[in-house]
Image (tube, rainbow, N blue to C red):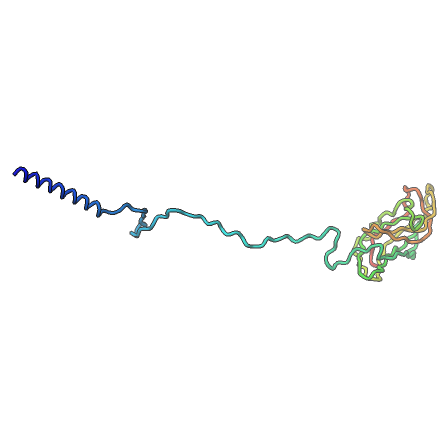
Length: 218
């Protein structure tokens, strides 16, 4: 009887162990990823396991270059250039008369070229011993009584300025010398014209015999 009870107990123990093994084999496996449930939806979504950032695409617009400024001393497209000595002829007109020992004359510069040009401002004028000679005495001072304006000279046209010459004999301390004429520099030009007109000059630079006005249309 006792052996029968032991046999029944062993059989029950074996059956319990087998049942435990069966339950373990049928249980859920370890989850491979976690899920979250969006509030109020009851739907699960897979949590991302990694993230990647994407750099914004580089701009494909071509680089722009600012427009170049015109070089100093150049004129805008189509604008006439300043008149230069090489394109001018010089003459004087002494019909303006004189007063108190002075002679007033017109200094005329004429465009001998084929393109229009502009005279603006004051000429540089001095008395010289000859066509290639150095200036004698003081150069002309500027007379501001006439305004500075742009004087457009078409081919063959003339611009004029008032040139005053004071007689050298008016000055007791003048060291008089002979002058062959005038050297004339057009406004803003480093080249000059020689205008033959014999007269007397003062060699001492403290005495000013000449004055020149701004060019005006003839």
